Image (tube, rainbow, N blue to C red; front, top):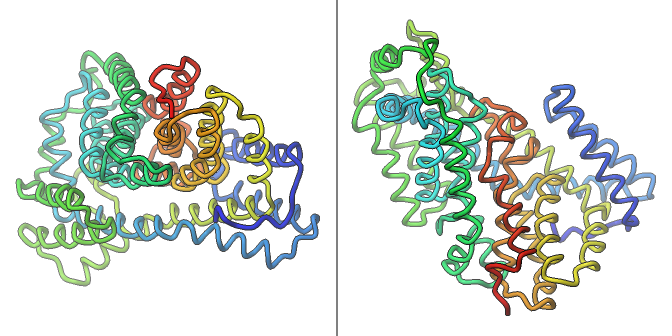
Length: 458
């Protein structure tokens, strides 16, 4: 999609006005009116089509732009299908219930948010996938927080921060490999250089989550032992239920493709379910498609474990297709290219180049909602500018991740934002102010850029 030929060339002010309208419609619809994000995106697509036709752009070209945009998200959509089946199989196989059960034994309300942040950092770093981390241990933590009557927004913020720490710093991460390869930097050199901004962000985030965690259990907090008993009575809590998580880590280390890893994890979860609750093939297929629906006397446990399935991903998938179709129109109409050209012409110093990189990464995430596209476009746009101001390529790779990878989950209509909200049941606008690590990424990269510290000259 990022190579799409622009069919018209709007001026910078015209393109900026269109972008302002888009952000205004999105923000007002989602934040002020509480509308599902599908609706403002449909409205914007309609407005862009009208704008394109008024510019004498053929409707077939506009339609083709939408199709190219949607096609760029097919890889993520296939992964969403498999994550839906993975969650279902890990529920009937006992992995998620067991994680929750033992999590209550080791995780207490005291320093809860800090513990959630650290554990999701470790899991994310190990498997290199933010979305898989959110869909597995993230679901377990949000369930614990609900049972202990703790802030779901804060919990989701800690989960997102930890998951994207791993997505950013793991050598197994797609975004980390993509960022280093685009600018031609050794992967481990790239990770080492990112530590200059990532470690301070980690420390600040950990301290913030520790300070915000409750220091004592409120009298209204649910009796955790009773909740654990209810979980154990489901017959889903078993020691061997940890094995799929171990397998997932091993396959990730072996660099098995994500789709195959998720598929193998799904099959393993189903196999384990036969050890404690054999199901017919019809029932298994129903669960994989429609999600797991428990039937226990405890309503809290029922609500906790009612998740997963391909059908449960439809909201996410349809929204991703719409958002990326909108992005395809923006490129076909030359709106994104016009803004890029203006930014590029004003980059004369190291400070301006790094600030421009951060703004571009944030802007693409906001406009198009696609993490990989934010990295690709930013890298292509700024590679020559870094050479001109005498900065080594690894500075660009770091800035791309600081303002590209970690910003995507903060946008309500982005691929990651939509997925996380669907998985955790917490709106993006609610966890946004508590995703400290993600918020600190672009702030620190700009701050270091202006101070000149940690920058490597070419």
